[in-house]
Length: 201
Ligand SMILES: [Zn+2]
Image (cartoon, rainbow, N blue to C red; front, top):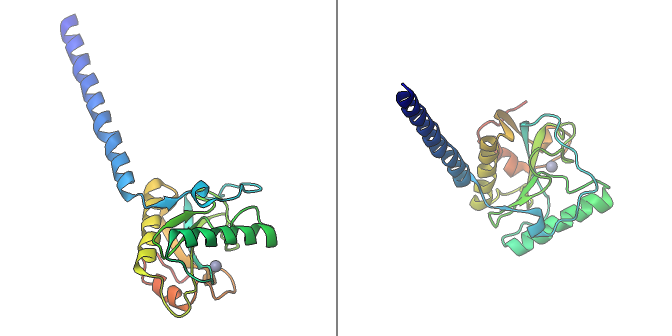
């Protein structure tokens, strides 16, 4: 009797252990495969934020796309310099606590961490407490961002959903849908209307 109980116990333990072994690395591997290249704040030389607030709604129900209305960049060195300039402008001139966006994307194909996941932004009132704001570096009034930048943004959104930082049924918006602005530029605004989850309202 004791012997069979021990055997059953061992069998159940093995099962649990096997499940754990199979499940955890599997999910981690999947997430790792989805993880796009994200240049961290320390890598691009970010200043410390003066204060940090979390999103009121996390995972975020909205993703808002911006352009920087500046020159674009096709190397990491130049994109990083642009991102540092944006942060300085936002903190020194606009008096914000940090760079406005949650993430930025360059035509070098890299994603640059802004405020990051789950953080209250300063990019599109009144959505700052419930959205992930992504800025594509460049002026996209008359042309679209290159394929590398478009892929990076779409991968980032997909990754955010799989991380549980963006709601699965999120709504994608262009900045001009939230306030009076030409952002994210006429071309880019046309383009995002072809992406999944874009909504006219
Ligand atoms: Zn904008």
